[in-house]
Length: 139
Image (tube, rainbow, N blue to C red; front, side):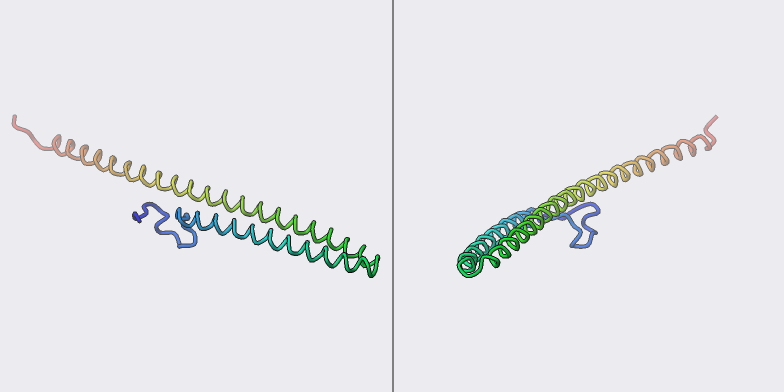
């Protein structure tokens, strides 16, 4: 792996921009988590249906209560999923902005270094001219 240049090489490890392999791992982890969520959601809905069928035969009031709980829980799960998606998009935006700011800082550092070098060259040239003008020449 090539050595990083610029300010990101001095950042704490948890604040550095992610490596490409990490992005792939993160995408795989996100996909895996989504599959787990969907699997759990399907299992829960099957269990609720089975309980509902048993409860419906036993007590209609319990069925109404179960239906109400399912609706409230479903809305909550949807809201939680929506918040997770929003947070993931904010995380991606912040990661992209961090990379952009690191590039900007590295560009500024490079420009600053070039300007400093140019100023040293100018100062040395002016000093040489001044020294040459101060020396008495042959008359």
